[in-house]
Length: 120
Image (tube, rainbow, N blue to C red; front, side, top):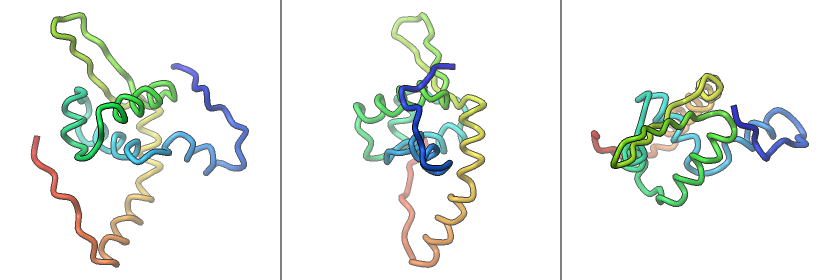
């Protein structure tokens, strides 16, 4: 597992956790990899409407450094790269399930609409 450049100091556990998931797309990347297992870069990009290529690359690199995402490169032409959650990433997804339930309640409470995602 790679070591992250971000190593505190932290005020509390929430501070340390938010350091890892900070960024608009990281929690959605974790959710997408949890739902589908292994994803290629283009599949992740299609599944996250609005994410730029630059931001997706940046978040995936940070998440790999933090030991949340595994990146596997296959020696073929054209290049093939697959992303999946590590065991550490799976534990973070489990920890975020309470937050997801809270968010679902909020969606219902305020009458918000979900984004319609295309089936890939």
